[in-house]
Image (cartoon, rainbow, N blue to C red; front, side, top):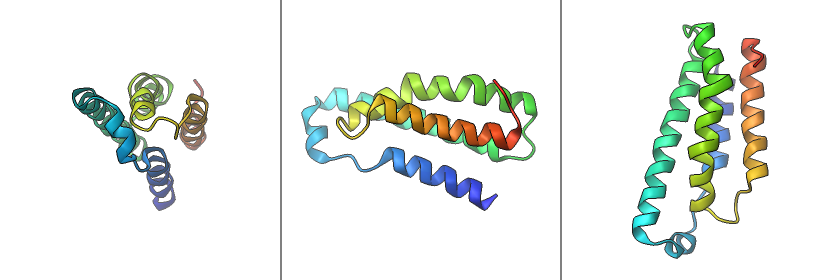
Length: 115
């Protein structure tokens, strides 16, 4: 269980990284605040999904819903675009999709889920 939590934590630390101040200054303040809020909300949702996946009491049908639909949708539609806007040049779509696949594959194997 500690290994799973460590893996998830490291995954998100790796993804979030440090946002450079000069890159933030390139965006208009209101736009930057909107994107930051989108990123934070999405990040919170993704953490909630991971908490559910790590909870042994979560039903299998809920795990399938999270892994096959909810998590990838939230990641691709909200988290990834916001992260790429907040840290231009640091992340590419291909790299973020690869990171998503690694995380999803881990939980799919752990819970024996096929989408």
